Length: 253
Image (cartoon, rainbow, N blue to C red; front, side):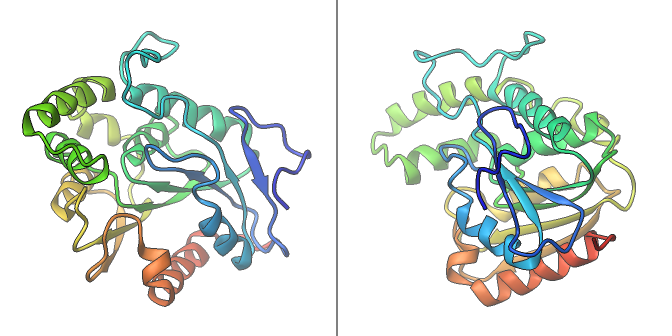
């Protein structure tokens, strides 16, 4: 059941009850940039069928238009990534018990920062699809070229510069030091497509290499593009994610 009133959540969050809950961990979905809490509905139904309750919400700063609002966090840090980290932390605080994070694309960067800030005290694993990633100049350029289809290279360069600014400067500065707070052996499943026009595999690897302590598993979808794994490679995607989630969820209800 979606939108159960039994759990009060910030940011208009929604709780999806599994038809038959089998595990105590709740899966927190973090949608991709430009999406919303309903974007992950297909994935929420999938994990519900496995026996997991899940929660979804909408990220506050989900655009790159500085005319709408400036991305400034409560501690006055500038950049969408800081707002997202703060918001993810608040969601983790609001959900009781153990959690698994299931994140998509760029906001996955903030998910890992939120986990590190909490020392993974109640997050037992992460599934990350199409992220996290560095090579931000290249990936932001790709976003405006392939997703927003800006033909002019001059305009695309301008939008890329604005986009990078709105994400927040200094993304990779002391990143490895920050992420060192994530404990050794922390389980992560990284999903990526070999034909992703937005986020190349090496951009994902560059971020994950900042955390050599992870127990990292990788699902590489041959011919996969950006975030199309569950739709185009359903059998392989579902079986791999299900196996990972079963291993990560140690306690059956």
